[in-house]
Image (cartoon, rainbow, N blue to C red; front, side):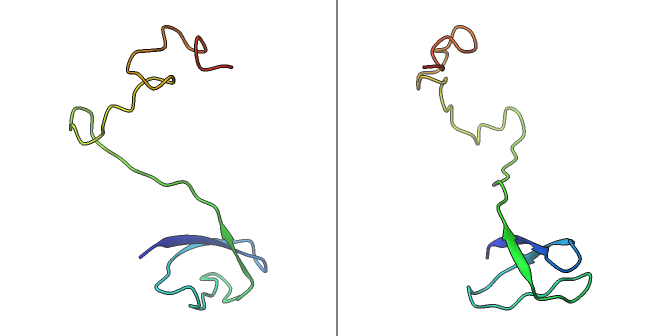
Length: 76
């Protein structure tokens, strides 16, 4: 069940909704308006340090520790 953020075009309020189907109607929680714009939001994942749940994604060049200093191989 995805959670989407919508901005109301009538009052400017931003609300989150769990959307069960693409044709589901949503209304502003502040004013009840139905002119809502879906907002882009970033995925949020949290882990605790040392939990081991996140894989080693490597350096900016694809190999762990491959960047000796910021920008050394990332800019191009």
